[in-house]
Length: 451
Image 1 (cartoon, one colour):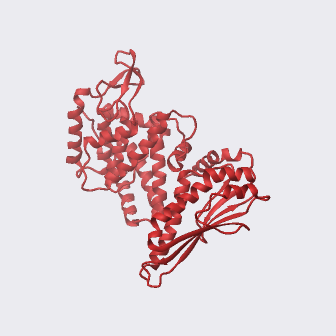
Image 2: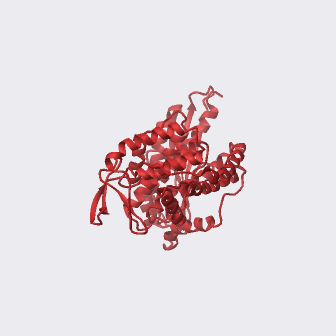
Image 3: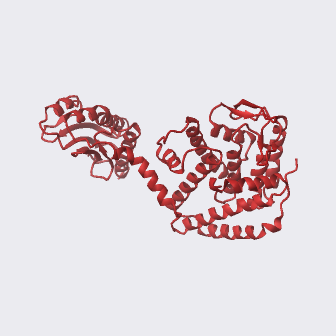
């Protein structure tokens, strides 16, 4: 197969510029943990959104952020689009992990696994035969294609990819070439050609474009470069560069990828210097996400504290959180002490021991005025590993405001809320609060054991 020609003279200046930026970035490393986290969050969002959007996924960048960073399912999109966005995010993470392992070699099984992740499950879609006859075909996951695939060119012609029987030897040759040429080529050139040669083979029924861009960035990241994001807004230019490569000229594609690599390097350098990496419209995008997250709350009527709503929240939120925390502490914290006891204080009501929480419903119902605060005190006596047997008490407090409630752990800044009374606690929120309280208690034990 003829893979095309590259005019290296036409990309020399660009490569020199990229090398200078790469050296500058290297001189600034390691960047701070916060800067690296912010930088990767930006690349992660843009890579996932644009690579999927190039292939027709209809989630907006704001909806993609909601899905990946907040685990909120946005809009009325097909389940397959949401699953594929999630799967692509896992594939991005895996590629980053593989690229960081210098001893690990990429395999055909790895490439098939990437396609399986982003396609998720077998499905049927409309297709057109090379003769122009409309039909349907099953899209398989993690397997090479069993029927021919092709693309209809703008002029109406047909560009055929590798035949199914040719895929296994071509994929084997592709990886052999990749590792043989790995040290001889500039990272930009090898990454771009790796991407293009994979596209020319088109080994799968679907997902080839997304996998090709995962492979492109696999090589760049393995060489200490940031990932390239190909914006869906320049799809026409991207396809034009690919068509030029199909016609034998690889130079426009290398230049195209190189210009986007330059942007990634410039953003990375800003991050490493501690400068803002926000671009002109980033704040607008964040506000759009915030509007989507809060619109449902803003449209809900305000619910004030009262007996009925307290009983509802006790059953579905307060009691599960209390029970989860106590059970978790009995399993993990209690073994370090000789004794664990507890009691409840509800405004002016007398204290009760840990085993008598069941009358809480009666207390709420009998109140003429809703309580403002409930305090659970957990007392741990005689720290076994300390010669003086220190004891400690932690308070777990529920604050009941007129229109919202908040949980607080002890005198620390660990809080859950504020939450409106018509909002229940999710399992994830409960687990997160319990984990933070547990870490606080564990730090106390670590400071005092053997002191």
